[in-house]
Length: 111
Length: 116
Image (cartoon, rainbow over the protein chains, first blue to last red):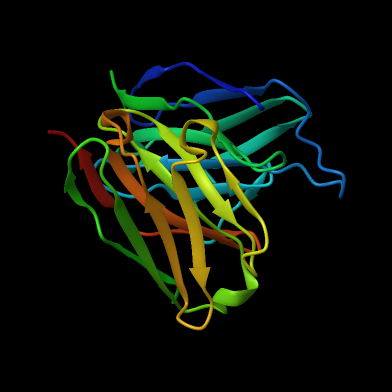
């Protein structure tokens, strides 16, 4: 099974600031079709997870350009710039190259 | 608009069974993979089981193999999760989810509590 290691677990931020979240996989996420199926979600309190980024770096419909994803192989990063109150919650990475595995989550909270 | 609506959750005793349902609309259900994901109280997301578009292939996480069965009825645009021999560690909110091309959709979730 693919293990997804997400860091940090908790991430204090000031509004307007910039943060990065890391997600590392135990094996390469490059699929045999050439795509890399690594995605990022945000779960706000009391809500279902919502897709932010699909296939490493593609913003989902309606997601502001403050969110950006990067990485390759086994090492991926989500960056959030100019953090706003609606960005607070728990972020998860998900790999769907080898079945499905979620990262453990990163809680973005105010300093 | 894609909608996924789960039902069937509740309180059940250890060792008993429960069947979850997910009613889908807004997309061609029979064309897409479907899955169940769960989240224990205050914990992270955990993929439980998935099923191919035609039901021909199913996949389960190790902790539920032999106890849970995922199935679908494409004529009814519905997904199911039959949960047998339930344990306290199965207590969680269960989400129905799908990936329509690059768009991921989730239901609102249904709570399952396993307790005596």
